[in-house]
Image (cartoon, rainbow, N blue to C red; front, side, top):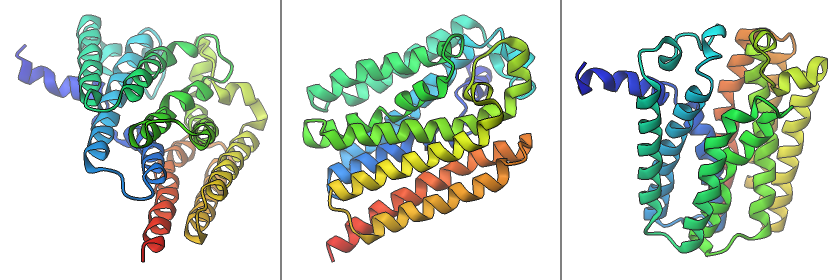
Length: 289
């Protein structure tokens, strides 16, 4: 089969047809860049992080499917993934993941040495996350670190250092990721119980909905603390209030634990991240008027 025939399969493996993961990775990075740069992140840094987010999310998807290739065929939602069906080989997947990671690393070489050093744990987190589902009770927390590592890297790129507020923002992202990925895991819970995968939806059990809402509350509370520490204005906090409204809508979706509605809530987290960013963006804009 020619390369042109393989490309659509590689695109599916990278989830290019499902951008929600890239967006959930991008929003926290944008929050960090805007706060670190006081609303004016350098364009070249913005471009590097936006493209790097796409590359690393794509690499992470390939690694995830490689790690789960023996499980995905037993899960209704994932049984048609390229590695599960065998239309893409494990060798192809490893080469693709390696190539995407290398491109992402080359992309950050013009930035300062701290960003480059921070990229090493970022790569480790992305590569190791899929395997945490074998032994961590709440692997979604590990995902939150991996998906939020653009926060300290963003501060490092703009300021040359990682201030304490960056780590508080990373902690907020961990709680947000536990919330949205638990919604995601609620979709697969029956299949995951059969094959022995560990997820927060299984660990929380009948308290899953309460745990999701608590995680949303903690995440937004930590971001409110960041806003106060950095002197943000009313628009920032209104953005958090809007995000709380989005989280309330998610409660209505997941309270009955309907699988389709849980998946809808997970995907809708794009809007929660966007509303928070809108608050940051408008707050910075108003301060310059």
